[in-house]
Image (cartoon, rainbow over all chains, first blue to last red; front, side, top):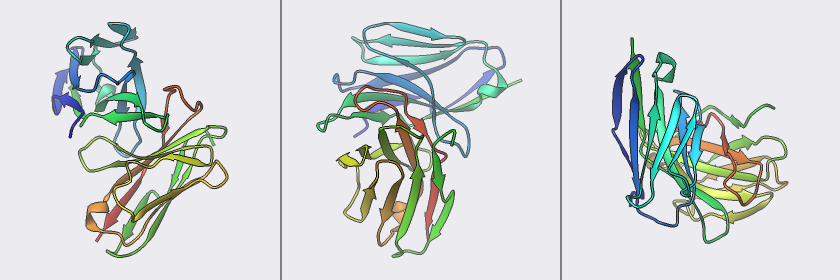
Length: 115
Length: 115
């Protein structure tokens, strides 16, 4: 049962372009939506996160757009650079039955920025 | 140390062998999580510790999987009688706060290959 669906699976964008990755969720109990960046051989690193009470959050070249009614959120990378080439995971967090916050990850998008 | 440290980085086990994977979280971090990441997939939650208490083990796939954090710092994930389907990267993450969705810092992971 995939609670967070992510697309596309892979994405190639020209340097300077906009990279867009989309995610959709089903469980309305999710209350925190982070994006993680993962380089080969490394663990995921938090990039940017949003709560469902706002529709957009921007940090530098990275923006999350959030549509609560559609249960969708997306990551936009402006002015994409070769150093942005990595795998990106969306995630959604909810409080478990045991009281801890629990992350559910999407399946990942492999982003390649070409010169 | 500056970040979450995991050892070994790579482990090859023969089917049926027991393995132990170690996680050194960031000093002072209350929460510790274990995740399993299959090839080409997002991390999947295994278990959660708040200090030395294992509050949530709902993600452990079978009774062959055990985790402990006896003194509230270092944690060990043990897999008994390993099977080929256990092959994956095992990620450990820690965060400072217990309940809020604070930023979780991930280690580089241990890549387990069962042959």
